Image 1 (cartoon, helix red, strand yellow):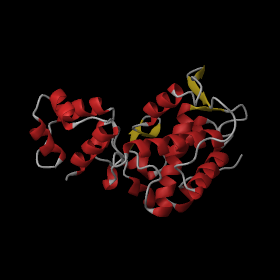
Image 2 (cartoon, one colour):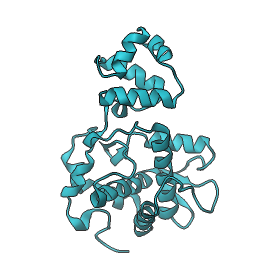
Image 3 (cartoon, rainbow, N blue to C red):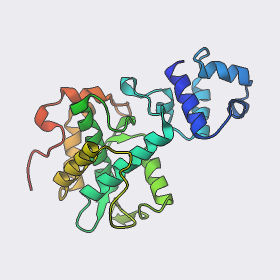
Amino acid sequence: MSNVGKNLESARLARGLTMEQVAEVLGMSRQTYALIEAGKKEITVSQAEKMAAMLRVELGDLIGAPDGISTLSNTLEAVKKYKQIILNALKAGADADGKITKTKLAKLVYLADFTWYYDHLAPMSGMTYRKLPRGPVADVYFRALDELEEEGIINPPEYKGKAMLLSLAENGEVPASELTKDEKRMIDKIGKVWKGYNTEAIVDFTHNQLPWQICRDGEAIPYGLITQEEPDHIWKPRTTL
């Protein structure tokens, strides 16, 4: 089975859909769709876009993530873990008032994920990150924040000028059931060392790393690029407050 076929099957099952239901939306027979999941029939771009919308996943995730990592191998579990990475990074890196900018939080999550890859040659979440104007951001980041707000775990965003501020709905421990102790320790370490730095400082830091510099705008960033970075420029700020 191809990566696309595996991703389709995992995403379909995660949504509780049958092959017949997906095939009907695509205007094809169940037998034809089954060939796609089995990797015996190619899909067109328009079909892939329609499937991604139906299954509520990113097109890039459906086609396949960098380094051969499938973010859909365990869709619900993977997204649940990614949300916990976000929440733990928010708690560790927020200012004294418990708030953090949406952009800075995205960078803390990126640094945790790619630093973990640097140390272990495996990502913490496996999500696909892209080169965007404000730095590397995971495809599912914005959807994950929306879902966390809908679930009442984070507050609706506040605005300070152009900055969007996020905060936890309640104080106390955030969920970490999907994280190992070492993963949580790394998230906490990175969040705490960047506490007090403004958003521009962490944006500049990630912009000066090889993964962001080498990739083209909008391109998926291979995790492996971080292994070519200077050892002292993986996650620590170069200046201290």
